[in-house]
Length: 270
Ligand code: A2P
Image 1 (tube, protein in one colour):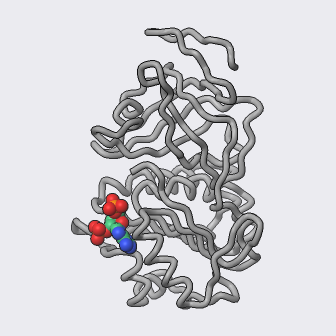
Image 2 (spheres, protein in one colour):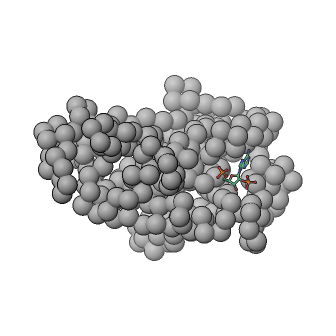
């Protein structure tokens, strides 16, 4: 993998400790969001919910950003869900990738949004905004999530309806997947809301938690530290506000080396 590899336009020198993988498909959702899938190196192991450093050569130098791996640990391919920032150091280039192009990935994945960082519970909430849904795209497709929890509630809030499509497609994919659909059954609930357009479900997730509408819409009791667990992924402000509500309900933040009732991670790019 460290040997120089030929690409269409230039010779790609792959740095030490880095994989160079081939893009398999690219799906653009809006002018701000896209998804890509690429080959998975044979020796690459990760836990569903972790992130990796993804990069491209920009001129002579590699530019990397942290990306949650959106595919589950069992998948033969790797999937990522990305924002497009017009002058973003990486995403201005990454948004133009095509099948056959090579993408760099550092060899060591990491992260706190993993099942191991939570103590046992009955109901797992995954709170996400924007591209923060990516680690949960991995976890909701992992059978282990449903072995550990009786109910899995994925919340996804975006500014506009079109930005929810990736999440709706994911749930549809699970429903159409023979083996996953059987495991997931009716355990997964997808609660999607928008804040800046008309939609049947409107509002920030934090407001919907505070008003209790989230729980009444889902037909579940309010947060209870005895049975409920949480994972949060979004902007820094969203993490802070959601974390405060979980703490108010009596849940404590955990980590890999100290499992507890909830874990958080910033949605990196964007
Ligand atoms: P809003 O439209 O009210 O700002 P962004 O793209 O800015 O990260 O926002 C993605 C989604 O997260 C938007 O729907 C936005 O709502 C919501 N959001 C932004 N900040 C917070 C916050 N502090 N708590 C909860 N939701 C938030």
